[in-house]
Length: 436
Image 1 (tube, rainbow, N blue to C red):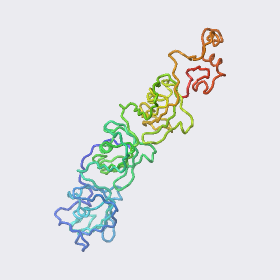
Image 2 (cartoon, rainbow, N blue to C red; image 1 turned 30 degrees about the horizontal axis):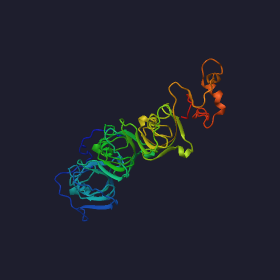
Image 3 (cartoon, rainbow, N blue to C red; image 1 turned 180 degrees about the horizontal axis):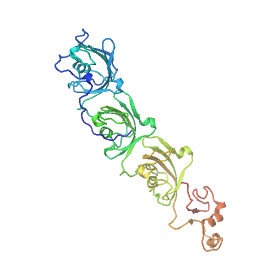
Image 4 (cartoon, one colour; image 1 turned 90 degrees about the vertical axis):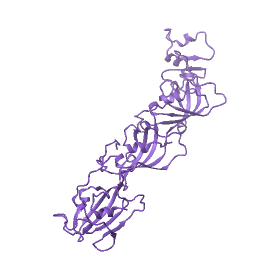
């Protein structure tokens, strides 16, 4: 569902002949008397009725119009469209103008209108005979007023809310969109995908732009939007003209394009003098989740650490940044915006597009990296003929294969390509060293 902002203007007076008001008629009288009086019977009233029709309101309703003998003369259902009109502004026959006042959305009324409050002694040629009593079965679908604003009802707010949505933030949220009578017209839940958009820059209808401001991650609220802040009298797709829209919103995450990573250190050991840097070989555990707490991945669950060479492009840029200047034993939380994570594309079936990522990290091991241009460092006793012993082909160069052939059978722990740490005190670094 696109929420583009349309233009709106007040609707013109309706052209349906049968509901035009005949001027000069007596004021309506509500009651249960004879055919000379207005008769209103409330056949169904909903349990919840936060608002009733007042003079000056705009309403959308369905109706069936019949004569007392049951013969139908008109029906909005036959046109598959509600009748849309202002109440109390002379756009309706006097009896209908009065009968709609006090109605709730989803209320059904049976209305009996005497001739003096309908089409009088003249009637409507070929349609309504003179002095006709008219019966209407009315179902109110919608109501709003030109003075209405966006209504916001927050029904869940998380205890912790360090940040709220502001103009220019990019938001991922789920929603159910309904009309005021409860009819569902769209749902992101049905598509199993969040609606992702910028706030406050014209990508949304004005009412939604306003309604999202100030929300927290995890917050849920109801946003009710009058049509002049939504799709106006024209509507859009399956949204009829002049419809009030009700959105049930759940914010999943948001960020701003100017965001960098956020690092919070929860624990540092007493000795935290050796800090990670580019080129170091790291072993660490992590839990990866979305900003709403949904767990994506965990090395603890897998029972093994994640091993990388820092700065070698083996992790997303935000994680590479978040692991720097960290000491063994330290625990920290790294929050990564999508432009430093997996971007708009995400990872199919694993990470949603445009998702903020949260990593809880514990660094378990750090092996200092090698100086620029070095393949390995020998920390034990050095043979006086070390170079010659490694250079098997005697070409004056030592390549990785020669090193592997010399010490490959004597390594302990990880294999070459998974850390390359040898019991003899030999650390090897290559293009294949360390897991992704």
